[in-house]
Image (cartoon, rainbow, N blue to C red; front, side, top):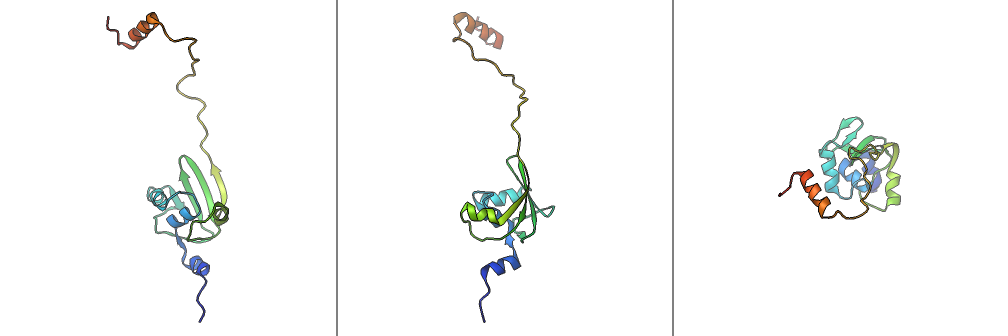
Length: 134
């Protein structure tokens, strides 16, 4: 009797979603991956996942990280965290929506003053802020 290949058993049984996210380098630690899945930031095939949910090749994952949204298809499974060149072979990016920098800020841009405020200017600023001791 021959022992089954480890990759074949992984593909048959699947791999925990938190472990796959860690191995595919979406999160630095398994703890962060588990917290993201528990917090509802990861959906597998359109449904909210739990950390123990098994993923298999062909599954569609929706991952939200720091305002960015990524939709990826699982291509392979790996139980170990390897180099980035191996990790990028585990998935295919379907859609990536990066958060744009907000250009319309509520605070208007002000130019830097030409010089430091003098005694008279400091007193005027204190009065303006309501901290006038006099």
